[in-house]
Image 1 (cartoon, helix red, strand yellow):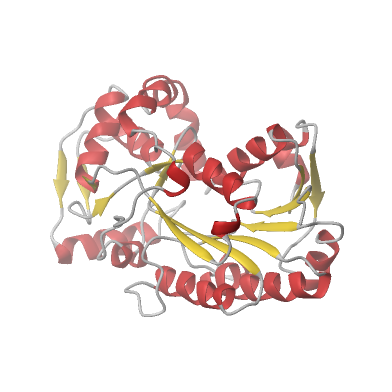
Image 2 (image 1 turned 120 degrees about the horizontal axis):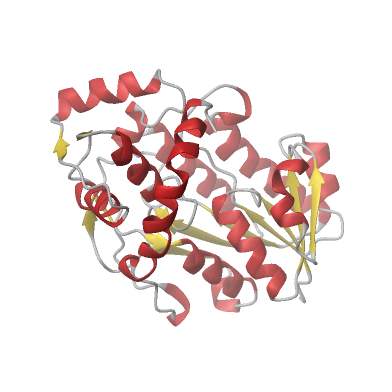
Amino acid sequence: MTIENILVLGGSGFVGSHLCERLAAAGYRVRVPARRADRVKHLAILPTVEVVETNVHDPAALAWCLRGQQAVVNLVGVLHDGPGTASFQRAHVELARNVVAACKARGVERLLHMSALNADVRGPSAYLRSKGEAEVIVRDSDLAWTIFRPSVVFGPRDRFLNLFACLQSIAPVLALGGANARFQPVYVEDVARAMVTALTDEEAVRAAYDLCWPKVYTLRELVRYAGAVSGHPRPVIGLPGGLAYLQALALELLPGKLMSRDNLKSMEVDSVCSSAFPFGMKPTALETVAPGWLADEATRRAHYDRLRIGARR
């Protein structure tokens, strides 16, 4: 089946913005639902992207968005549990179920689904369990699905390396829970590139791919790297289990929720891959691209990032 029109759920987010740019550049017509269209003007200027102001958690609205589409990409996800649409159950599980049902009703066969490394219904955290439940829903459907399970995703405007760079610009010392947790960060452009490739690759149908850069880092090493490259190197103190738990509990109560107890539980399982990057692609090394924005953006935008953290944005 020829794919020309693609619905991208979560297209206004970090990964979604990069994916939509790649899809538009490849000539696809892309529909992006958003709660506030005025907040995704950077996508609306792309020539083949249509931004629709709607709520995809409403089954009727979701069904309307699927009209005329040949494929769906579901990137919707939240890192912290909360009320309403921000809850893990609503954002991950219920939406996955609604997407599968809407695809079947509209005759849309192709579905790309963003999960997470270590997603498992028996996982240590509510986040990983909800991601695991969503995977089961997708895998049990009779759709032509592909699942992607990335480690932590980095890139310009991410809320990972940039956040740690910002924190080190204002704190003399950084106390860190889960400092020894291991990650294989993957570049956002590589994630987008893999998803675009999967759309038309028959071998990707009903396949799941772990996405990682081959090098393994501890969280402590990544935090130190972000501080050093951004020009704000700080001592990083790893907190033992009890203190890490108390820190996460305290941070849950602060605006922006920089860390939660559930995040800490997720880090009990190393976010590393046992397989090579798919489609014969060579992933991008962190050290080759991160200095391009950390050295500039962290200094220029530190003040604005602090305001966003305070405003829960």
